[in-house]
Image 1: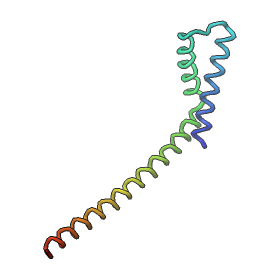
Image 2: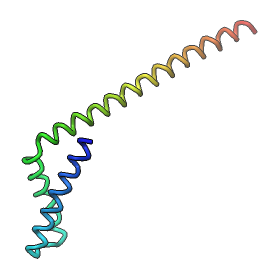
Image 3: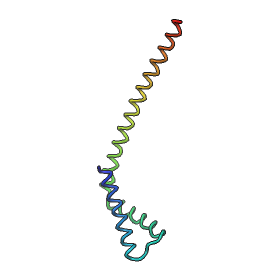
Image 4: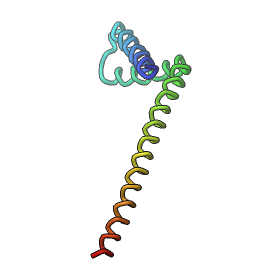
Length: 94
């Protein structure tokens, strides 16, 4: 939920910057690029706590995902090793 809150805050900052530029009649493609840069700078300065919190949450997601992948790889390796041994034994019996 922290990632969603951070995303919403960054989007809100961008929309406010675009709104201010629109009120100043400065709305074209170059101004939109400027708005992205201005909103990024404001968000970087104004939201360090939210950014750290969102990063920690995403790190937890990545860690859990990597753990799940490692468990699946270990399970697959165990199945492959069991299948190889079984195939070798069958070959010896024939």
